[in-house]
Image (tube, rainbow, N blue to C red):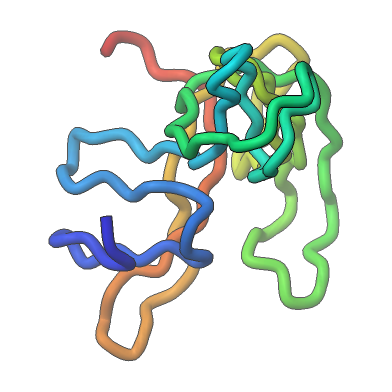
Length: 143
C-alpha cells in the first residue's frame, strides 16, 4: 500500500502502520515475525531475540490488545500531536508484542482494559489529505 489511500489518508510516518483502504477496514501496525519460531516483534529487527534466527519477515500485527501499564499526561508537551490529558500506554497485542502508544481518552483507562488500534487526525497536508497517527482506544463491542 502506498503513502496515501484512495480515501485521502496519509500516515504521519511511513512504514509503521497500514491505513485501511475502506471505511470499515482496520488499521494495523507493521512488525516482523521470525520464520523459525514465529515470535513477533513490533520493532523491526534482523535477528530474533527468542531463538537467534537471522532474517525476519515483515508482518501485520493484531489491531487488538490489552493495556499492560500506563501513565496519564496532564500537560501538553511542546510539539506534541496529542492534547492533554491523554495516556501513554504499553499495550500487549493479542499476537504477542508489546507496543507503546497514546490513548487519547483517559476515561476508564486501566490495566487490563481491552483496546483496539485507531487512527488519530494530526493535520491536513498541502494536498488536503488527512495526516494520521495511530492510537489505541477502548475496544468496541462486535466485529
